[in-house]
Image 1 (cartoon, helix red, strand yellow):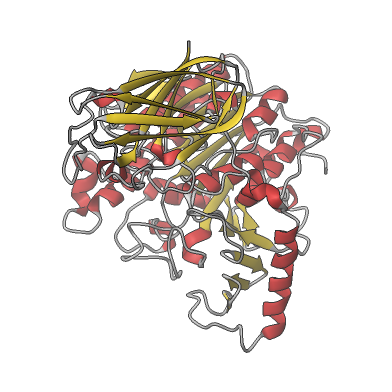
Image 2 (image 1 turned 90 degrees about the vertical axis):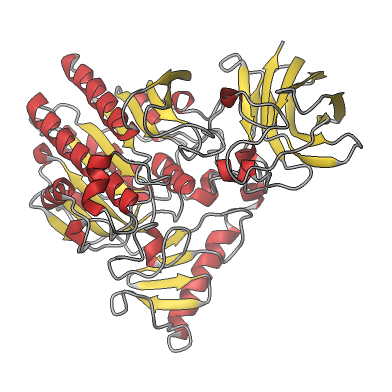
Length: 559
């Protein structure tokens, strides 16, 4: 590792790190990138002060992108390849960014969207964040936050449920700034991770931010970005007035490609979130550090990716890399500090999974070339919109990238198909609430999916680790406890009522059932479980014993 500024004579004290990550904001959702409608003056000003990676790539979806950022590893390697289907957890034994920084003498905090697990040992405070202010699942109206609202809703602080007033975007910024102010008062270097859930749907925003976009579609989405922009201005002012700005490495980025705004403007890119075209994974990444001698604000067009962020900030901060860490990303410190203008030649792979992980569903990046799904080849320097497939006319490039991907895939091994379990019976989380969003191979991670009873007559199973042998109580619900509805009730429009008369649980070779009625709110089953890995499936039946649906919520406690 090259010497960082902190290792040089007359070195600065440890720099702070502040990472702001917005959700579902595409490359075109900035006025500085040419959006003809949206106004983002504070973000535009920030961009002008930063080193800008203009050829920067993330995963095309929330969880895998965040997992890559936190581990410096490809999603397929770290295990968190999808937002649902039992594939949203980092494999055990992989050190995450907050753990590494905490070990290096930093205070660590998260304020906003985590989306890498709602249960021990996957919660943010289990992964090194000493201060954790966050929501569950992918956000408001996810299966985990079924009835939560962006205004006057609930959040979690270190695992404890709390309430907030106002809009959640203000909550995350306010909490982060208060925490950073305290670190400043105590002269403690910090890693602050500020991942907003905005502008992800639902696009619920305060009227003052939506009103300037009335008559446009999507006004709520643009309003959410305007609200973020307001807070970015507040954040910049706070950093200046508190004396934190000079020695804080500020990184602004987004988690994946465009969503609601792409029909209006997509900065000339093809595709959107979930796709392997540039519009799905090319995102902004701006880095500022006034005291860090980064040189003048400028664009860097080298192909880079969010796996590079962790090794980069470790080098800039002089924090040791864990001996067993195996990063797929590379440090960008030399580029940022002007010690080099190019990275060594390398090839990048963008891959995640919506459900099952499939070979060749990917993008391979080498210089200006993009191999999409193993069949389409584009030169994005000459053809930003990826409209001209060159696979037939440039077979040597196509085969070069196919061969690289084949080697990359073969080195992954069978471990990529192993599911990371959720713990039950752990001392650190006595009561675990399991959600349908983590049923293996089932895409049921929204309130709408729960309402319409997605998942078939038995739903799916959860992969679990019974931490301690013992007697367990399992309470099965059609609806989450916080809305307190009977099993047979409906919840909102397009909600499917089920004539539930019985429930069953299958786990660790055991099957237990109980009778109930649609007016009851939950079905409680008790059984003794051995320690170890297993699968748990729970479902509801009607009066004749016919399977109706999976139990969308299961509350498990060791007695």
